[in-house]
Each structure stands twice: as structure tokens, then as C-alpha cells.
Length: 324
Length: 133
View 1 (cartoon, each protein chain N blue to C red):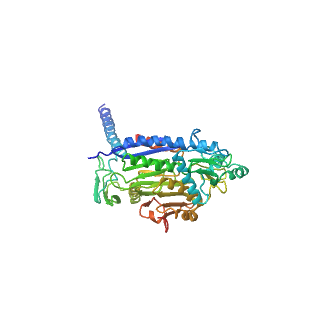
View 2 (view 1 turned 90 degrees about the vertical axis):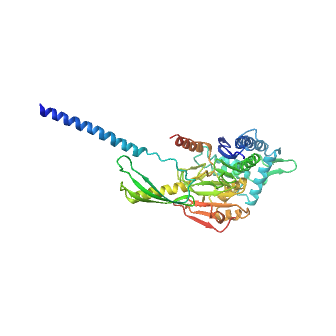
């Protein structure tokens, strides 16, 4: 008889808190290995670590291309794919704009309009040069830089699952600061119960998703944001076209997908693009589903989630005839 | 003199009686306040209709009897069958609704917009404080 063990961990990493729970004969070893991968991912992808590959590419912007590892090449090429697919509403060269706004680091008023206008031309994913033969990356203009905020944690989530599988773990759940990835079902065969944070009520759930083998990622205007003197909310998801936080009429978007990279990028894309355009983009990714919350706190759920989403108290749900 | 002794006797009896009554009464209050509610694993409920009773402490002030219906592994309905406390039905209905709602939203983890470490750690701290109670 094989022994099933359970192992759990809570760590700080990637600028947030990461929790893992794994079941299997080698659960403890698998979590140790996953924690090592977390450190490695951060050392490759973080623009805040001067020695990371991304920092190297950023420093050489406007001058030369830098050799990069397979993982960094993979995440950058996926990012460009998403940018192309959504016609630039998602852009990993958003870095200069993110730094200008400085949201999440005690910013309390928007930057000057002139500075936003000066910064905007630096944001353009078409200026990211990827050489598949050389495995190198570069940025065309000085001052440009890559920020993987909208995809890095999702990418790490997919890498974590690979490690769990390598260690024979058949049931696991990982939460990277709100990005959830599940492997298999729970050991008793029941689905994982993933609560969806309410975008306007702290410590309250919009509802509950029951999932097996899915990534569940949410983007919203309620974390990393500030409200100015006039009561206007400025959140961290910036529109690469306007240079301001996106105003698409949505308060939060949750994506349910087989892959966490996809869920992470698509949640940002749908949030920034809004309901109508966002759902069109979603149509390009078969098997992905979404929960959208508009500014009136109306909840819209794509039809594939009809039976696995349970709404919270006082939450009305509209089923959309798309997704899947 | 005799009258005075009788008076003192009565006062002592009243005092002692009062102390005994108060001790019993406060013990009863404490029991009501600290009544432990643990041990139900809401994830493992077999379908069916069950009747539960609580005898209501030493004086049976809080005795009541309820009927709980479990369907598809979840508490679907709670009905009050008997009660000595006589609270209005709105009170008990609201209480039971809370039980039904909270068990139905028990989660393994929560998906939310990416949280920065400070805010998240605050939540972790909060959870740990609760766990210590």
C-alpha cells in the first residue's frame, strides 16, 4: 500500500505570500523542490533583483540583446503572444509607466499628464526583440523596460505544477498571493473549493468555485490601488494606450483555465479590455472560462462555470452564453 | 435581645442564601456563555434528517430541540422543534441561515487580485490570531 502524506508551507516570495498544500508519498520533498523553484524564478524574472536576467535585459535597453535562459525566453514569448492576440492591451514593456505611477508604494496622486505623455512611447511590445536561435532578448529604445507583473506569477504556477508531478504528487493546491493553481482533486476525490474575493467587501466572498486541475486567477481594481482627494480610484492595471489605470467598467475578472500562465495574462487582458471586447479575446482560448463583475457589482459567469460556481450571499449571477 | 438574635439569624440566612443562589446563577451564565461548539466536520455529512437536543444547563432554561436536514452533503434546512427560551422566530431563523450559508462557503483557498505582501501578511496574522483562540 502506498502511503499518502500531506505537506504544507507558507512562504514569502515574488513580492507576496505563497502557500502550498500537497498530498502524496513524496509530498514534503515536492514542497521543498517547489520552494527552490520559487527562488530560482524570482532570481530570473524579477525586475527588482539587479542580477536577474530581466534586469540584465532592461539595463541593456537601446544598446544590445542579452542571452537568456529557456524559462525567460518562454515567458517573454508567451507574453508577446498574448500582446499580439489582444492587440496591445496587455504589454510587458509597461515598466516605465508602472514606475511613473508607483501604485502600491504609497502613491496618493496621479503623475503629471506631461510625464505620462513622455512615457507612453516607451511602452510597445513590438520593440521587444526575441531571437529564438540565439535565445536572446533585447529592447529597441533606451529607457524601455520589461515588467512581468501580469504574467510572472502565473508562469511560476505552471512551473510549480511540473515539479509536483515530477514528485508523483496527484493532489495539490498552490496560492501565489491570490493566484490559485490546483492539481487533481482533493485526496477524497472532491473538487477544490476556491473562494473568489468580493471586489468591494473585505473578508467576504463573491462566491465559490469547485474545480479540479484548474488555475483560478483574479485581477481587480481593489488591490494595489489608491483613492485620491476627490474619491476617484486609481488601481494598478494600467492601460498602455492612455497611460492611466484602465477604465473598462469592470471591478474584477476571474479566469479559470487549464494553465496558470494563460489564466494570469487573460485576467489582466479581460479586466483592461472590458466585458464586450474581453469576451471576444476569451473566445480565442478554448476551455477557458470567466467570472466578470461590473461596477454595479453585477456578476456575469460564462456558461461552462454554470454548475461549478456557487454565488455568495446576496450575489446575483447572470449566465453568459459564451466561453468554454 | 431575642429579637435581635432572630434578626441577625435572618440576615445571615438571606446573605448565605444569596451567595449560594448567585454562585449557581453565575455558573449557569458562564456555562451559557462558554458553551463549546466544536467537532462538526462540515465536509463529512451524510444525507438525512436528524433531530438534535440540548438539555439547556442545570435549570433547563435554554433547552431546545432542532431538526436538521442534510442533502448532497450539505446542511439544507434547520427547523426549531421545541424551545424553552422563547426567542422570536426571526432571531432563530437568522441564526440558522448563517449556519447554512457559512458551511456552504467553506473554502480551501481564496483567489483574489494579486495581493502585496504587507496586506497579505496582515491577513495571515489575523488568521493565526484566530487560530490561537
